[in-house]
Structure formats: C-alpha cells, structure tokens
Length: 153
Image 1 (tube, rainbow, N blue to C red):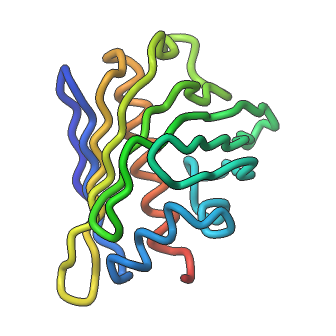
Image 2 (cartoon, one colour):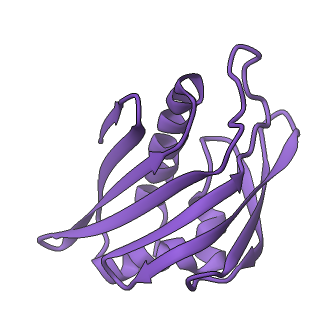
C-alpha cells in the first residue's frame, strides 16, 4: 500500500486480489461494505446506501471503545467499474484524539479502480480536510483497504 498527504488531499493506493467489478461491488453493496469499512476494530452498520448520483449514504460506525458516530454523505458520480465519488458531510469522530480537529466542512472522495492483471488497484483521493485530520483519514483509509483485501468476496 502507498499513501501520501499533501496540503490539499490524501491519496491512498492499495492492490486487492479482486477484479474491478468485484472491488467496485465492495463499495456499493451494503452487506460487503459492512465487512470492511472503517479502521481496524471498528464495526460499521449501513443504514442507507443509495449508490447513484445524488443518492445518500449513512454508515453508523462503532469504535472498539463502544463510542459510535455516523458517517454520512452523497454520491456525486458512479462510473461502474472504474470510479465512484462522494461528498462526506459528517465525518465519524469516535475515539478521535483530542489533538485532532474534526472537519468543519464536507470533504470530497474519489475512488478509482484500475485493473492490474487479475487484481485491482484501488486509489482513494480525499480533498477538503484540515491538515491534522488528513493523517487520521490516511490511517483510516489504509486500514479499511487492508480489511477489504482480507474480506472474502
């Protein structure tokens, strides 16, 4: 996995042993999302997932401590099986360190699915986060993609 943070965005790259269609489905199928979404130790319940431009999602995330918070947003583009994008309105802040400021504004996420032989590279780009939250997002996305790679399709 490769990751990077700039002043403008977080970029995470991870190769998974899935076809682009399978990897794409893992992002839009509620049962699959619940298996891998969130950092290590988190549990996610999909309350709503309307994967179409203008459709909303609501994910209830529970941290290992039991603290819970929603992550909500709206899909802005769906291009099966190459990309999807969404705006995150509410960022989950359960168990967030006191030294990190929660995002004050929505952020924008683009997820690209690039074929690599019989595997797929998933590239996540998230823009619109304050600098201290970017590091938290980088770790969270990295752990989520590791969980996705370990999830049976």
